[in-house]
Length: 165
Image (cartoon, rainbow, N blue to C red; front, side, top):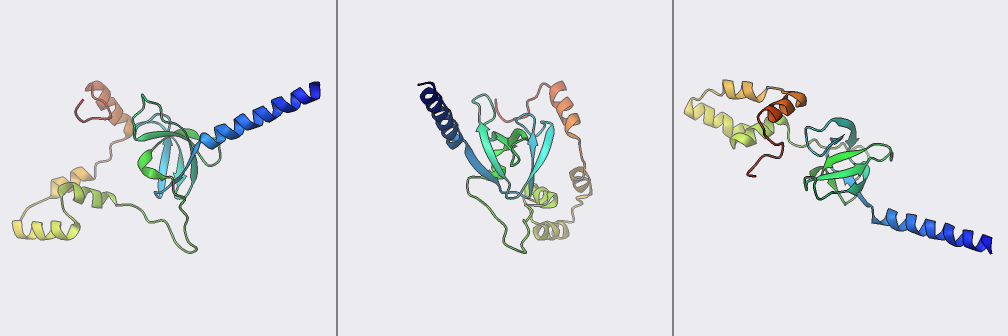
């Protein structure tokens, strides 16, 4: 009788484990590299890196967390933290033999897009309008460490999310 009960309990434990594992969503990194962070947000302390194609398990997306951040476990099952949802997909990604992951837009491309230009349009505009973008280019080269940004936000009473509140 005791062996039968033990077998039933063991089967129930296995079934619960299987069901909870089925509930966890598997996703794949779709960018060249992304960081797992201690807290949801770009100012969260980096805990480690994930690379293109790495499989992560989504653990949670709490209601009080920003909607575009997911709590995940890395492919090794040990690294746990937050990543931005834009860097993962539910579709499995894989590189073909000899291929390399393409990097997304460079910081220069992003800066040009912020100005509303690609490099060709910017050069043409500079040539035709005789404008000097020296100081704009210098500002784009500033590298402000995350801890300084965090102090600035705290001292100014600002939130990382920004936008209309």
